[in-house]
Amino acid sequence: MTVVNNFVKQALAGLRILLVLTVITGVLYPAAVWGVSRLPGLQSNAEAVDTTLVGVARDGDQWFHTRPSAATLPASGGSNKGERNADYDQVVAERRTAIAHREGVSEDRVPQDAVTASASGLDPHISREYAELQVPRVARATGRSAQAVHDLVAASAGGTFTETVNVTELNRALETAR
Image (tube, rainbow, N blue to C red; front, side):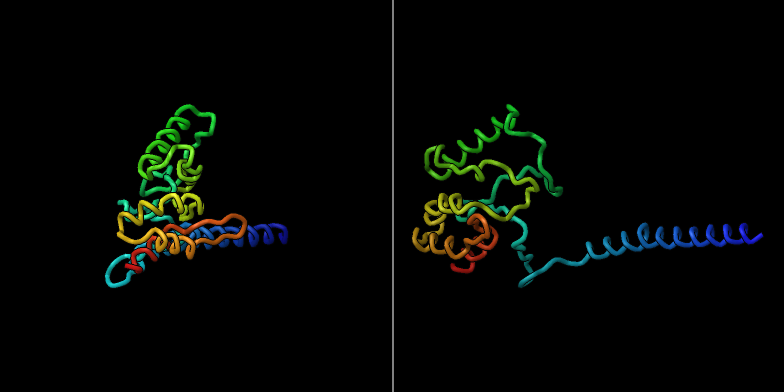
């Protein structure tokens, strides 16, 4: 009889744990995530503020450009195409030609991060080399001296192993320096 009682007690304890965890992980947690996703974003003067943790692409010659994105909004994620994929090689070559034309340089001066997509499509960083390549265009479009724009790039550069520039921070600095 005690063996049966122990079995029943353990079975009931297991069922209680199953029900509690099902409610927590299947109902409460998803409801909490959904609720947080409905909170309004960070705003300043009733306008959305860019986070510096995510690369925010801005159109126009007056802005520094981020790396190309493999993501299709609103989702993020890269492609599975590798460097030996002919389609990928063609896309990279087209990007190199377009960026060389936009920046007014030869194709061999276009850095690798300017033509290869960020895996998540959300990377806010570019190489210092790519940022410096964009300085003359941004200076022309904003009416600033190239030295003033170069100084903004230098102030935004940093990194632990390689020197990178956070494009979102740089564009924000460019906007507030007007």
